[in-house]
Length: 49
Image 1 (spheres, rainbow, N blue to C red):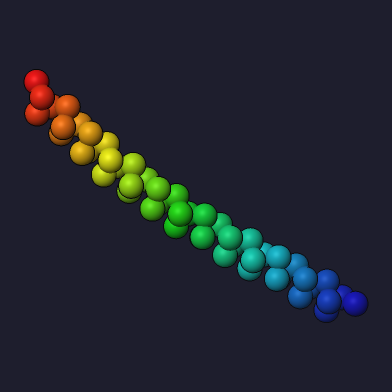
Image 2: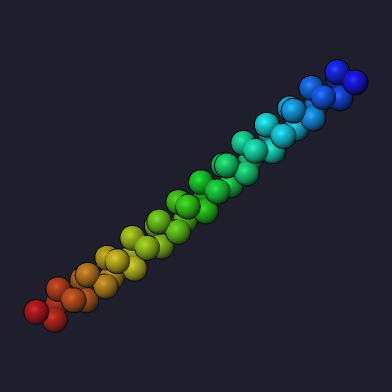
């Protein structure tokens, strides 16, 4: 029973770390897209003046 509890805790920890890394990856992708869109929008606005 103790081994099952240890394996369950390890699986939850590893799964949680994997989910956290996946979330960070998507956060980085979204940040890069927003940076590119902001740069394009800023350069377009600056060229009109």
